[in-house]
Amino acid sequence: KFVQLKTKEIAIDAGLNATLEQVVGSERDRTDVTVHDWIVRDDKGVVQTWDDGSAKTTVMHTDVAVVNATANSYVNRSAKLRGSAAHARGARKIKKYQSQVAPDLFVPAIVEAHGLLDHGFVKLLSNIAESHIDLSRPGADLSMTERSVIKSQLMNKSYQLISVALQKGLETNLTEAVKRATMEHARRTGVGAGQPGLS
Image (tube, rainbow, N blue to C red; front, side):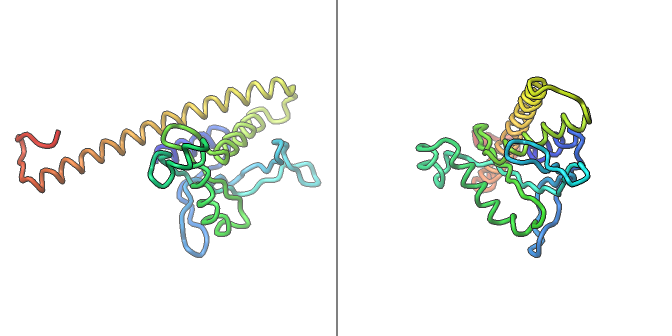
């Protein structure tokens, strides 16, 4: 939840209209974050425009996932190719959601537990950074160098925010796992309140 909420917050801070838990498709699944005014860009980041010069927009859905690259299902592949766990999870998300959200856009937002972002998540944050520049200074005549510097700063800030959100989420999950294990141990052994329990 922490990474999901931070992704939405980054989009809103950029001036985009983002919401959580959008129901999509006939299967009634929910995507984590939906940006309703996603600016369409080509592979080089150039805004695509209509005949009147206005920017093309679409609805973009993303589903956030944190994967453990050292899990049994990923560890052999991850040892050979960095980021393969995130890439594999992203491919599964695309297979699940792309047709459900059509004609809208779907971009997976996958991060490995050690902090590596999949290329889809990087593209998502890159588009948001570009949009932040465009929406905060519409029509501004920035040089390519100025734009590049601003985008780098925005991307760096986004990486930091996602990293902190990831660590908070992992801490929360670990605390909850310890709590459940302690309660289960007490239930199985009959250890009561105030008695030494699971260390």
